[in-house]
Image (tube, rainbow, N blue to C red):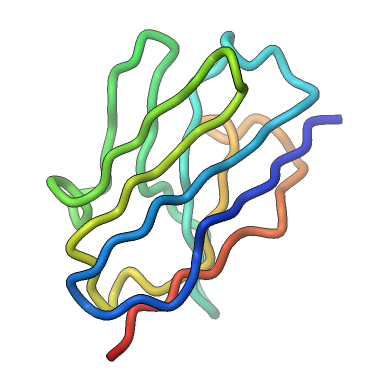
Length: 115
């Protein structure tokens, strides 16, 4: 079974930065595209950023120029560098394949942007 462990979230002021990390296990990591997703209460989980096997990127319009996704095929990790954070970025952040390929999700990591 594929497992995900997200970390790096926290409380940050508007304009601040955070780096999220997702440790994965149980998959053929290099064979998949991977993504970061976020969810706020009462709404569906949405893709924020994706990275293909070849290292090509996709970003939700609202985070373009502010977020950067990366992957490490040796460590089986996916990182999300977030900068110029706004209160609208407040959410629980998760990782999974992109598009979603696994039923299992990690516990997520809470990002709260507030002054």
